[in-house]
Length: 119
Image 1 (cartoon, rainbow, N blue to C red):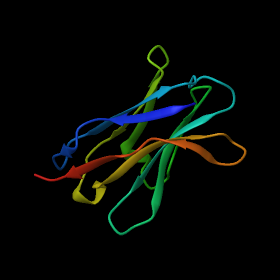
Image 2 (spheres, rainbow, N blue to C red):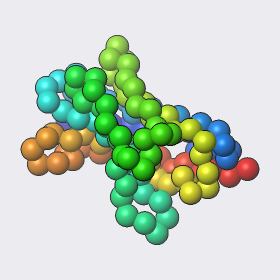
Image 3 (cartoon, rainbow, N blue to C red):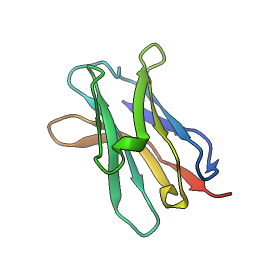
């Protein structure tokens, strides 16, 4: 059973960098052909895909967030991370990591972690 767990600070000040880590257990992030995504949900809004890192290490980003987003991984720890720079209160959201199996969509999700941007 694959499990994903998000971790990181729950409160970030405006203009700072938001950093979150997703720790994966029960499966390797380098296994063909999975893609590992960051998705968020702001208050009153739908789910927003932010970006992903594939099993190969290739990364993909939402055009609207690309200039502020970096996704990386540590294969030794089976983790992948999200960095979002220059945050504003509009980046306040519930942040999820999820696995895309490239066939049926997202098959495993983390429980989500709330991040609030406030001074």
